[in-house]
Image (cartoon, rainbow, N blue to C red; front, top):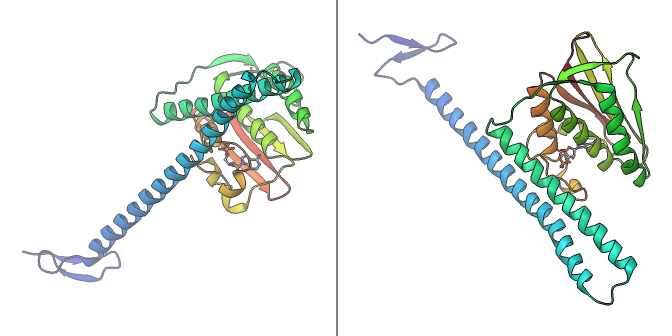
Length: 271
Ligand code: ADP
């Protein structure tokens, strides 16, 4: 006996085996089209990522090769030699950053990234970051401020220090890159069972419709605009993966043209 078939709205759809369930077929087709669009979107993203990546690799590579050629010339003055060496060094560092991003990204994607927790004094770590970044910000004419926490005693945190430092370093590097004038402030607040870190800048800001997307892999807020800034578009997706591996959340608040505030949380137990 064939049973009558009803859809969700309880409409009679005929007998199974005689009249086919059109609604189900339609849904299947819609799912297929959606998956196709998703695949196409991801293909498009990958192509734009590869194009950006080859630009990101070629530019410093050309810098290294071009300025090495100049160094070989016999009539180069001492001042020119120094300048060449500086460019070769900064191009090498830029390449190293890209390679590190790519290696970290593929480790995350393949599930090979492991968490190694240790106990450390968080204030001491942030002081060290501040000392490292201060001259870099000053070179660009920016002010950097480290806002100390609301407790004067030592704050011991147990988490993966390398990953926490990688997230803060990435946010501070972005703040430096996307801020043309003004200041960047970073620090953390102690909440009930977590620490809330922040990096606030007075930079170019992020448009409303880009705020979620920038944490996705390969995404740059405005591809044409970001072209004038170097970068792989992987930094924030790596940061998001790290923060989530450590049990926290990451988000951004921003006003376009005014500045951005990046926040993330890390679980914390007061000792
Ligand atoms: P990128 O290597 O391009 O900087 P990220 O993943 O670190 O890649 O950042 C993704 C995008 O988010 C950037 O291309 C930029 O458009 C935007 N962005 C990140 N940080 C900031 C910031 N502090 N101010 C404005 N835009 C930012």
